[in-house]
Length: 407
Image (cartoon, rainbow, N blue to C red; front, top):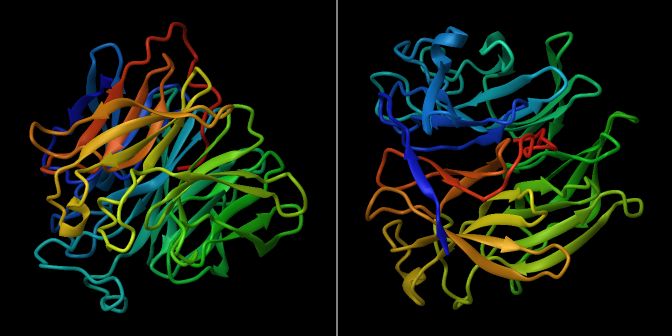
């Protein structure tokens, strides 16, 4: 197997998570370097430089949006599955999220501190990075008092779609008017992904794993009778979508849930009135399903198509029985699996590592750059975290197309 190369984030304060990685409209890889465990911690946007083979820190988000990290309020500490690339304009959109305590605070509870004007999170902020000019084009208040969990772009209509945390509302932002509105609450468990189809319809899931669809043609948000697959013996409760990627043809979407023993699925949104869902089986090794295990171990993410038309995703390997320890220190191996959409064949393709002796399996998102190489954003232990680059031995340019327009 190949082994991906790990690139740690190298700025202060020390980053502890990478919750978003995406291909920009320029074919370069952007990632969020997050400091969510540090009081007064912020988030930085980094970009892989394929000429110097290093990471460049291009935006200090707190400075760019005018939200001081020492204000005492909960900070703009993350970009959480909330990059959205616009190939037509060259803009890379990014929306911020919450969790870090304010400077000087020991902890932050977004529920308990909701009415505390001195400590509460003021708002998610939207930042537009112009990849053609290499500068921040503009910033705007995005979701009031809440963070942005995930983001998607409808380039044709000039709309952004988002799900907020804590209240789990579905939001629509008009880019021309710089106005946002909520279509209401989805449930109590946030979906981690919004995706779109070729008709411009928007999909996510509620806390019971049921798909929710918005149509810009009718303005209607509705629950449809399609459920995210769950493992045998489980209900679909908590089977919210974690990550999803469109096929190269754009006719279907592959995804995984944020759930115990996650299964890979394939959804055909235009097949019939509600689309057609396929269960493609578990992504992990066999194990004793009567044993509860931590979601940190039971994790799959980083779905990305290679230029070869194969689907790649990151999963975990552990020693049989080790899942019973229910600890974050369980020895693991991060594995990139290659899935053949035509035959359904799965094979271990590459290893993901973090720091020597550390973990590398927990991947948030993945992307493909203009040279066809794959990148994976990681939440590794010990810190600092970073991203991994997996060379794919491809030749040519513009191999990043088509660009994914959701985080």
